[in-house]
Image (cartoon, rainbow, N blue to C red):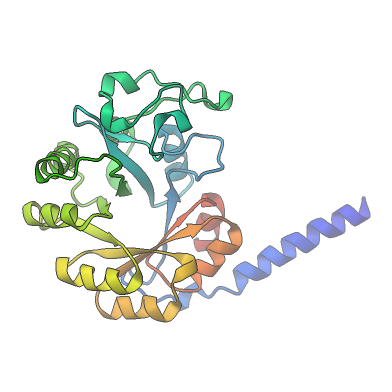
Length: 275
């Protein structure tokens, strides 16, 4: 018993030191000099809930995340749904692309993982409709564009679906929107210049595009950005979102760089450290 107790104490001591070494009073950013914890598709990729499920998202918010990152795709009948993978068969009993499915086709999809059998794919409209105190949170919407149609008309349809859903729930100030394709960013900025766009690109290109579009911020991989680069972005009035925080150590490393927001798979840990 004594060796086990010693190991536990060492682990607790190590964690305590790691946290105490962080001087959060020194944080300087464009987010009120504090770092906001965001859940990665809810509670993260290895949680007890499916990625992007209502349950995963609501639990992340309930334990103290200030927002969540969500993967969004659009169905054939222009419904925005929460789903990450390119094909349905990777996670569910359906096959094909969401782009080729109507919303009614997706409602009854079952996850392959038997532990997830009770959960369903949800639409963005359903999420906003059923989350309690939805206006208390921020939603980082990462739009996936796996479909082959790259026409201007399709882009307009997608943008209109986004605007319709956001404005139905009066969440214009609560959403952060990220399209990897520049065309979508430009179209959205043209029709809704007040929306908060976040650029998903390399640091150098992201800074340039953020400046061109007067974007709210840029999102970067924690492994590929330095503290000095984040300071540079802040000097230019650009907020920084970091993803790639898959572990507790990743959380601590990201905090040291003083970003504005961290998207994490270890939500409980990050929330506790930032309190």
